[in-house]
Image 1 (tube, one colour):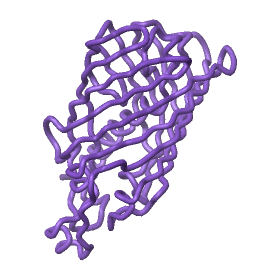
Image 2 (cartoon, rainbow, N blue to C red; image 1 turned 135 degrees about the vertical axis):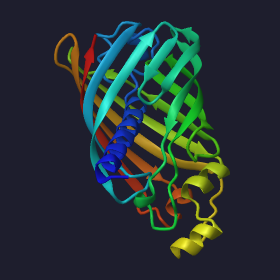
Image 3 (cartoon, rainbow, N blue to C red; image 1 turned 180 degrees about the vertical axis):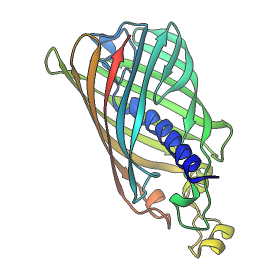
Length: 273
């Protein structure tokens, strides 16, 4: 593979990863969008129930969760809702089987992040990016929005096991142009997921000279997120997102994980068609 094609592959992968990263960080005010729990790049006052939002941004992300190295990459912003169909950064492509003003549930196919061989110590090998099947339920009450999801690999890549997420947000309108959305979240992973993603088996240990590591399943991290949305005009919004993840011992005890605290951030523009 040539250097140019390798760099292009890495850029495409980073764009997909960062696009995934956007939506869960900035849940929208559901009571102002007819129950839509994730409109990350547009002021709810602008967004109709059916909408098409396309944009571009830049993200500072670690190579993988707990990695020491970070990269700044351009990222696409995608948020499309047509009836029960949706295509959203962070949620994938799917349908809502239940689509009520205060309750939504459905399924989607989403991109599950892995890592390349050169992003981890020599001998560990790559974890190929995978398409995952995702089931979710979300609801809104008293100004709060909550979403719970479960994702498992369905085809492609090397991911194994099950990952579950729970997130609660409280969007706050500061002015006609500014909205802030603080959120907190928690992730749980099965033992199979943890061992495949962060573990070191006997063969990997022999190749890398690292000790073997077999983590158990359980809560793997908690995070705090803040999105600030500034409406420039009737169609264009500027958004800034900050995320701080606290990795638990199941992750940080891995011989190739370097950080207990993993910050990340995104800035971008979204255009509502």
